[in-house]
Image: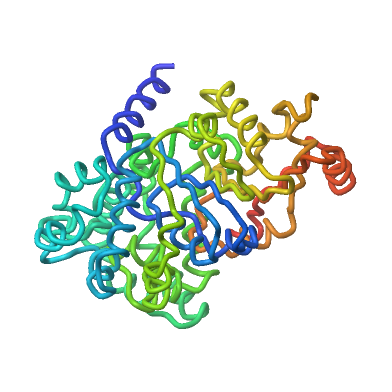
Length: 427
């Protein structure tokens, strides 16, 4: 009980006062395939660092609403939106590609500050130092809670494991065979050891990454070897089974910057131009919870990206999770597509949730049709590779029992119809 209380206190302190995510850790390439986005779609997504909202916008959606309870996350997205509108590409890339801007004060004062909404302006008035490119953490991508962990890992790589040359060779490898040889012959034995395992088992360490105790407990319960072994297996998969030459997630984590060849889509010059030409204006930020936002809007949605926040809600606020799903159903088009990820290898808490539809009570298992085959296929290609499972579901509102019948036919029961990421595929 005391451990749980202390863990929550550390997590709340970390997240209550800080920018947590300086970049998104969900692969939008997979999301865009799963959602089949088009010009008539209206998307609701948790903001995080805003990178993926910009990525989705490239599919020309009608509207994207980003919601985050942490105002600092929305301030970051607002800075990106202002930068796209106000800056030339090279300046923007120096800022968000290299993670630094040598003349930040001048650029911010002359081009960005007045383009920001009040709350974002207040935040960046105080935190522009993140882009100075100076000090012990000279990249924006070493700032914020997750950035501090990335900086710490780079310090471990440079000073304790002393494997920086091997990391650089790994990132420049052109084939999987070359990656595998570097990783298994010289890198893994030096990189992975008792000190690192000890750190990865600490609540305070994982809180920096935005991993709440509920998610850690899921892995300790279901994954052989617990969370440290899960992370080790994820790293094995990332470095030996997936091409690193386009894996911008791990490049920025291991170096503090992107390159023009290895970066998110919004940092490519041709896509920057498309966003500047008007696509960026289709993105709208909201600092609140998903539940409060949905209960206050008449907007409806054809697509939802829910990330992994339901892991935490399911353990601590099941009543809020139930109300949130009711609001999602109320605001969803028939046959809306929903995506979510989880630390759990098996997500058991969604299907039993009861919601009202057309005056009748239904379990979500009756309304959601899961695309397990596609989810497993995409999960195996996930360049981030840190989640236990990935789900793609279509919400049926006009004939809900058709979804239940289909799930039963495919899996034997509604309760077992959840699409789980396959460790055989990804690790």
